[in-house]
Image 1: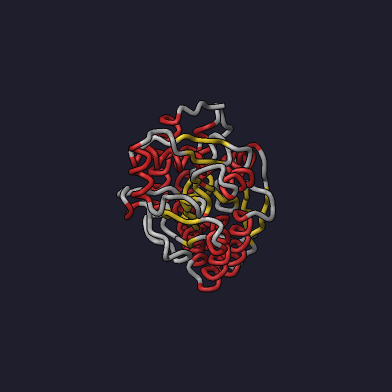
Image 2 (image 1 turned 60 degrees about the horizontal axis):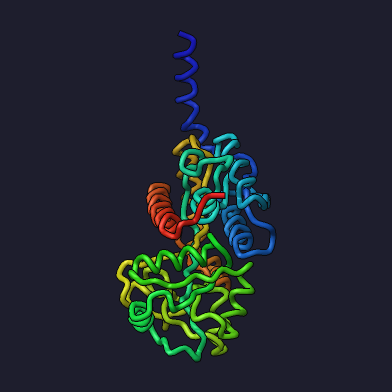
Length: 318
């Protein structure tokens, strides 16, 4: 009898908790050091969420171990909505696929709240390149398989994996040249040592505006408002192609659905507010904001996309 009464009390208390949530400050775990794009996105969204929820959202940077420290912190947190995670594409999908073991399982331990923002890559070449669009690239690569090189920030980096996804989708062979970091890969392309690369839109735009690089295509499904003159790869001979990095918000698994709805509404309200949209534009990221179910489906599709790229590239877990 007593267990039944206890269960009934918990069920009765759940709606009350949701109605009063949040009653104290929230903590947003950010798996990156202060100052980077992801951290800035977190702080912009956190500030606006504070205004919407009427409670402070405290940013807690837990960088290190490829996001494992932050991921484990949230996975073990009490599922009451007061601890949330800025769950990026690397933390929620790519790094767990590349690591032999992780202290958390993103599909088991996280409850997706909302997709916050995304940033496409830009397929860029040196201005002296004879390639002027994606169709030129595909034709040239099919004529001479493996002759065209593309650089990346390293084996298993996002810039490497998006190249592998592109190779598979376009049914071509390109030779991957890994560098130790984004800066070295960018310098090699600018010096004409590489033939192309997939650069983040943030890094690519200044070079495109100065004429030091030329864009062949952008990797989002639709043209970017940040670079509307660059055609999508999908519309340039590789239908359906997409390869992006993103930031989202997740909570611990088992967080009550009513609380999840409050969190999701606050994130959506934050990223769709005009001042946040404007600030995101300065960072070259696109705002999204969607439901927990939509975000969960998105993460599932991203897992399938990147796991296929890792498998086909023969990248082994470390």
